[in-house]
Amino acid sequence: MRKHLSVQVFFLLLAVTAHAQILTPATWTVKPAKSSVKVGETVDILFSVRINPGW
Image (cartoon, rainbow, N blue to C red):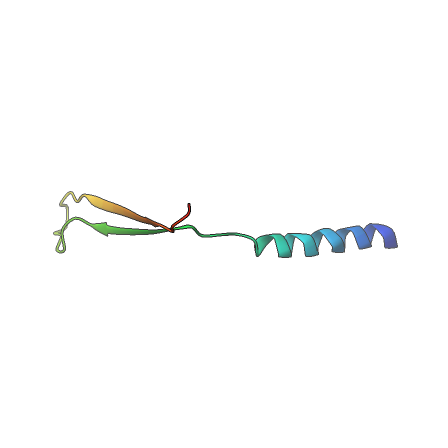
């Protein structure tokens, strides 16, 4: 039982440290094509991405 608990704690700590390894090489922005929109109007949405150098 104690060995089983030790293995669970090990994998829990491993998961916490693995979460810290996530990189964000790109930054996304989303905005409407027009600054003012009326109710019921169709709007184009512009997606922009900034990719860090080296990616």
